[in-house]
Each structure stands twice: as structure tokens, then as C-alpha cells.
Length: 124
Image (spheres, rainbow, N blue to C red):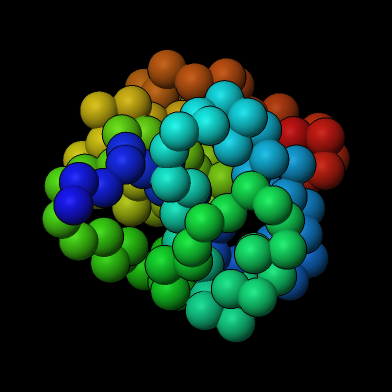
């Protein structure tokens, strides 16, 4: 059986950060309706992730630890963890042809939108 393409979302943080990310998970679901949305986060968030209506499965991952992705690279990988090379490198390592990351002074070569430090996390 052929698997559908995947969108990997890196958001391995605490409960507040998980909840703050829900609008982004839903936006990715809307943008990629035929894809499997995979959230790299602590396994304890799996029941909550299912309730978002946006996440198909949780890939257990620790904060700033390598993402244990297996098989073909996801079609898209999004960094919702931060704006620097520590999290960007984790996203790059899965080999997705499309990545979504914030550019910042810490990693200015990223072609994503610029990270605005004063912007509230919920707005970002």
C-alpha cells in the first residue's frame, strides 16, 4: 500500500506551546488536505493532537533531539519550534524538498519570513 505524502511539523515543547501551535497545525491541514500531518512532539500529546482535527499522528520526539523520521522524506517539513539553527538543522535533516522556517540573525540564510522577536507567539 502506498502511503500518502506527509507534512512533518516539529513542535517538541510543553503543553502551552503545543496548544499555541494548534492554529498552525490547522493551517497546514488546510494547505495540504491530501497529506498526512505528522507532529514531532512528546508522545503524551497524541490524545490532544487527535482532538485538533489537524494532526494524523504524533511522532514521539524530544526537544531539540533528532527527529526519528523513517522511510522516504516527508514532502514538507515545518519548524514551529524556533528560529535558529538548532531546530532548523533538525528539520533539514529529514530531507524534505520543501521546508518552512523563520529566518533570523541566528540563521539568516533561511528563505522564510523574518522572525520578529517582539511578536507574540500566538500571533506568530
